[in-house]
Image (cartoon, rainbow, N blue to C red; front, side, top):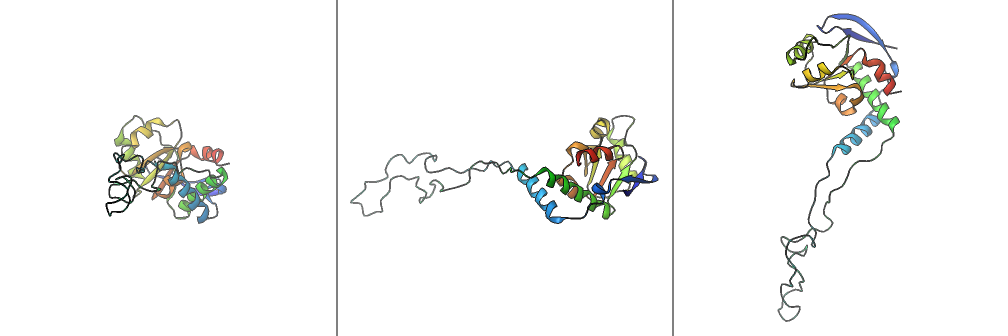
Length: 207
C-alpha cells in the first residue's frame, strides 16, 4: 500500500491514508502513457476537413476550347486539378481518426499518470468534498484552503453532484466524476485532488 497525504475540506492535514500501490505507486512507463494520450487525442479529432474533387467543383462541364487547331494544350474542363480554382487530387476527406487501443494499456497508462503525480507531490486526498449548498463560492473556498496552484483536476464520487456543479465554473479547475477520469485530465493538470471515497471506485475501475 502507498501512503498519501489526507486533508479535510478546509485544508487541515489529517495525516495519511493507505491507497493501492498498483494505482498510486506504479512504475513509470512513458511509452504506455504516450500511446494512451495519442489514442485519446486521435479520438477527440472531429475529422471534418474536406476538399473538392474535379467532379465536385462547380462549373467545368463545357470543354473550354476545341481539341485541335488552337495551338493551346488540350483541355477538357476548367476545373481540372491542373488549373487555378480546379479540383484537388487525393485531398483530405471527412474521416474518423479513432482506433482501438487495448483496455489493459489504457488502464495502465492512467495508473502510471496518477503514480507520477504522487511522486511529484502533486496528488492529495481530501476526506470529504461535500458542500452544504450548491455555491461556486463555497467550492472556491474549499480549494483555496488546499493552497494548490495552476490547473487542478478534482476527482469526485458519482453522487457528489453539488460539488461538481459548484466547481465547474471556477477558472483552472476541472471537476470530473471518477468514471470519466482520463489520461488527458491527469497529464495536463498541475495538481490532482481526489475524494477519499473515490479510491475504492478507482480500484474497481482499474482492476
